[in-house]
Length: 287
Image (tube, rainbow, N blue to C red; front, side):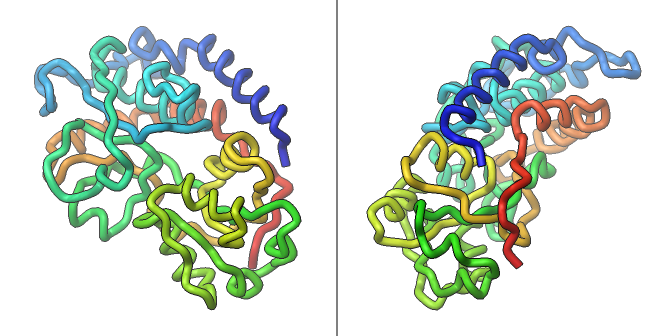
């Protein structure tokens, strides 16, 4: 497991590497390997919240490795770099991207949206699809268990072992559903308004463990909270992965999906994954 200094150093190094890589930060001037123009569309033909602008919202704050320095505008971090690459591939320049804030839970609530799309690790679920539309999945992360240093949770090797502990989770997340459906704790999980509140319950000894995607868990345990550790990796992420969120009925979805497919086909998406989402190989895998 990486320590705090290694994690910070890696984030700084990756930020420098990304800034120096034209394929990731200057895609508008690039071409695909086949030589066709990167910009796929005339933005004047796209159905946008504001003509000539692509409005992207995130939660606040946003964390590494998804965004760097709590600044989605800098094109750094996995989602920061991917959102910029998608915008450029769709035909926008960087000064035509408007960033804004919507809370995580509000992003997939019913009703009109002030954004063209929202990107903050929102898992695609059938329930959420009733209120909003999603893009195709752009990443599927392993799910992990987080606990305190020295906790008996660290002795658990199976889901059955985990079930005897008290879990806590943010309301409305797929993490909560995984706790209920897969871990099946004998004590009802605590439910909090935010993930930070849930983690604080671990620090305060009000709960034993929580669940988060691997990359978020690395930040939470190495940077955000002292004394928390990743206990292990769950055997299954039952969701469909992360997707960009759109207002229900948005006509922009197929344009986004075409841009995403283009980035995947020419290898740009994989380069962004490799730049920002390194995964440790020494974590326990629960059975």
